[in-house]
Image (tube, rainbow, N blue to C red):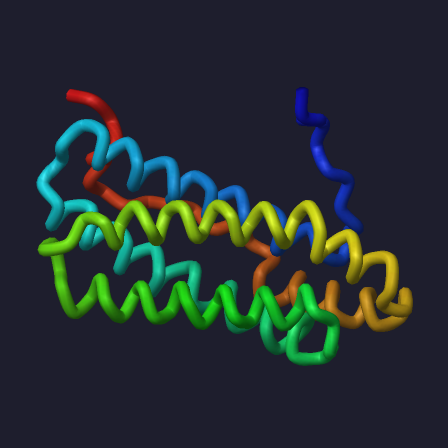
Length: 161
């Protein structure tokens, strides 16, 4: 059986970890909408809302503050996964509601990426980055990402009617 205890996160990276919770919720909402056979244009609009209002700035912060500062293989993997999810967003935006397989792929990719960051990458960075650098990163995150993202999307398509 897996260890489901909460992961202890340094105070400095907590804003990103809190935002990861919103990402996991997004993936769940997409899957629930697909499971209930919701009109795909409703899910499509939500994915674009989530990207524009949360995920794009989250990616930018991780890349600028954490991943582009290291040659570590996990940082490179995270950057590659960000690029793949950006590409998926582009495809979803182009195809609109025509290819729901992209929605599932996006939800699955986002969840797997968050798990990688929380279980492997963030612990590595917390263990290897100097305390002063972590504090500096934390100060920037507290300013830019200090408020928890509130998903106030009005169409709750993920709730079974």
